Length: 334
Image 1 (cartoon, rainbow, N blue to C red):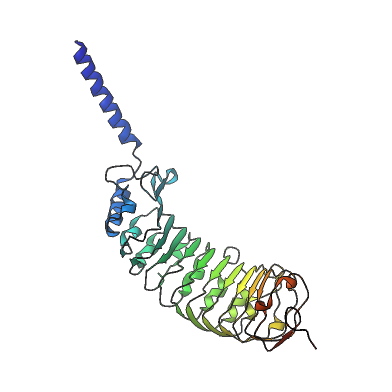
Image 2 (image 1 turned 180 degrees about the horizontal axis):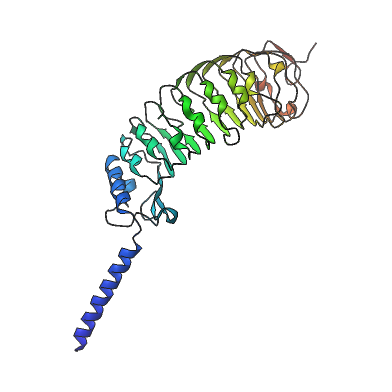
C-alpha cells in the first residue's frame, strides 16, 4: 500500500474509534433528553439553558442544572434552574414527566407564572422540592401517600393561594414544610398535629392570610421550628409549647393570640421566642434562662422582667407597649 493509502485508512480508523467512544460516553437517556428539550421550549428557550443542545450528553454536568445518577442507570435525578429574571413563562408541565427526578430546585425566577401543575405529584421518587421566589399562583398541589419519599417541601415566597392541604401528614419522611410568604387562607388542619415528629423539624406558615384558632392537636407537635408570624390567628397558642419538647424557635408574632403567658411551659432548648404584636397577657413563664432572642412587645403583659440568662442583653424594644411590665431595661418596679 502507498503511504497515502495507509494514512487514509488510519484516519478512517481514528474517526470510527472516536465516534464510537463519543457514542459510548453519552450517558443521557433519550427519553430524558426529549423531555428536557421540551422543558427548555416551555421555558421559552432562555439563554440560561443554552447548554441544552440536542444530541449532546445531558449527563456528566454538560447541561446546566442537570445531573444524573449511575444508581438509576444514568437517568436524570436532579434539576436546578435558578436566579434568572429573564425567564418569562408559565411553569413547565413537562417537568412532571421526568420519572426518576429526586431533587427539583426552582429558585428566584420572578417572572415564572401560572399554577404548579397537580401532575408534579406523579414524581414518586421526589425527595426535595423547592419552588421559591417565583410568581407562581394557584393552590398547593395535593400530595398523597404516593409521595412517600418527599423530605422537604419548600414553596415559600410565591403567590400561592387556597388553603393548606390536610393530607400532608401522610408523608412519612417529610422534614421541612415551608409555605411562608404566600397568600394562603383558612385555618390549620387538625391533621397537622399528626406529623411524624421523628422526621418533621420545620413548620413555617408565616406571612400568609391564615386565620382562626389553632387546633388543640398541635399539642402533639414536637419539632424544632414553629413559625406562624403575621397571619390572623386568634385565641390560644399555648399548645405549641411544652417542657418536654425539643423546640428551638417559636415565632407567633403579628397575630391576635390571647392567652396567659405565665402558664406556658417552655422547653429547655428554646432559644428564639417572638410573641410580639398579639393580645397575650399575664407575666413571664419559668425556664427563660436559655432564651437568646426575645420579643414580647405590643402585648398585655404585667409584672417584673426576669433577671436570668440573657435578659440583661435584651433592649427596650423587646418589652415596649405592654400593660404593666417593669424592671430593667424598662423603668423599675415600685
